[in-house]
Image 1 (tube, one colour):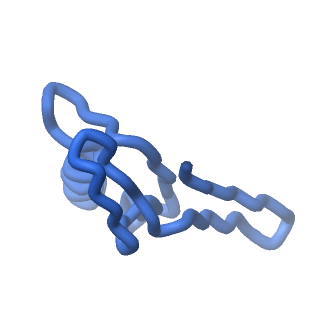
Image 2 (cartoon, rainbow, N blue to C red; image 1 turned 180 degrees about the vertical axis):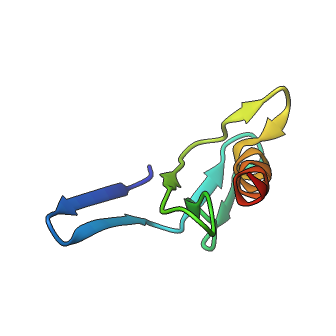
Length: 74
């Protein structure tokens, strides 16, 4: 189970998530997974992920990192 939280008020936005994760197939437990991502160094965009999401067999973590690189150059 994952926890992701987004709090919005007139002062700003905060994103937070736990760092625990499991891979059911391997029955492995990790206590230091990245689930909160900054999507740009120039703009204030963020994302929270959970689960083992993949796009064309590429992990969502890698997709978001590539997207951040794209956003920083455009």
